[in-house]
Amino acid sequence: MEIFSWLPVKSIARCRCVSKLWNAVLRRPDFTELYLSRSSSRPQLLFVLRNMDGVVFFSSHQPQNPVENSSFAVASHRLSHLPCHSGIVGPSNGFVLLRGVRGRKKQGLVSLQFNPSTGQLLPLPQVKTRSRMFGTFSCMGYDSVKKQFKALSVIFSDAKFEYSYLTLGIGKPSWRLVECCIPHLPRTEGICINGVFYYVGTRLKNSSMIVCFDFSSEKFSFLNLSGPMENATSLINYNGKLGSVASDSFNGGDTGFELWVLEDLEKKEWSNHVYVFPPVWQNVVEKTILHFSGVVGTNEFVFVPITLSDPFYVFYYNVEKNTVVRVGVRGMEAFGGYRVKAFSNHVENVERIRAF
Picture 1 (cartoon, rainbow, N blue to C red):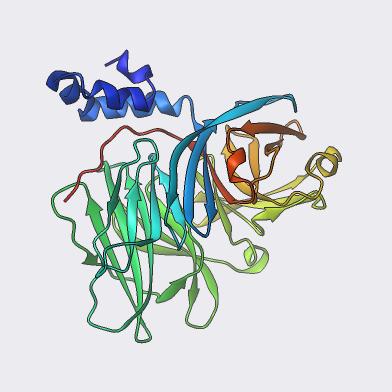
Picture 2 (picture 1 turned 90 degrees about the vertical axis):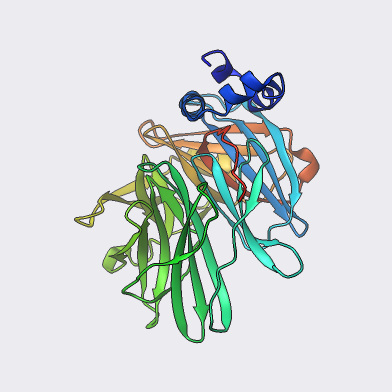
């Protein structure tokens, strides 16, 4: 298993075909945990390219502490043109959730649990309601305590909201209602950090808040957005903590940004950080429009262009050194003009999705 854990995912798939013994070994939970541990030491950037036809997945090596603008990475192709119309949630423990995928004739649009490493996908069962449904919001996260993937669904129907969750991977999953003391409408795609899913929600009186759903306890909690934090509605993973900034898009004209970090969820305590870009930021970024992709290590902020161009660069801003480095990414040139969404610190997971 030690040797297997260093192989790429495609080689693991081939090795499963060698014999029944190898297949059994490579499906064991302890091997999955070992492979995840190895993958965590070599995290990747996961690129999701999107146009009217659907989404395309790529991944590339994530450089640690890049120091030269001349460095580059090569992106490897994952899956082409999977029809996805309502956004992507993730990744969480190597898996993502695709929303608004065309299902069977009677299903309409469904959500899919998807493993970019293996290409496996599984449609989530549709949520049933007796009321007239006007819309749904679905998200997925990983419960590290029970080692299970779980999904949350918010249904808007006849001026009321219903909240349900399901557990994936054990038997036939079924949605279960969960109580929520504050009716709200989800406003952002959200992010899962350490088993808690965060997204910005709007109350019926149009006031905003951060909604927290703990996949382990399966309970809601809420964080008010008031005062100086009122506009900090773009959520990121900051070293395993929830981070919030006022905007998700940046360009060479920006001088810096303000970051709020949730230090204690129970006490609802935040810390505030103000970062000022160095003068070279304007020359390196120029007119490129960027979005946050995450944080590498403890001090490297990752910015990715929102549109794929040739050449294509990823920008790393080191807050301690106050430096900006751009790294070229090759291999995606055939998809010029596609919209780009990127996730840093992606890990490869060889766990196979269990059908139901």
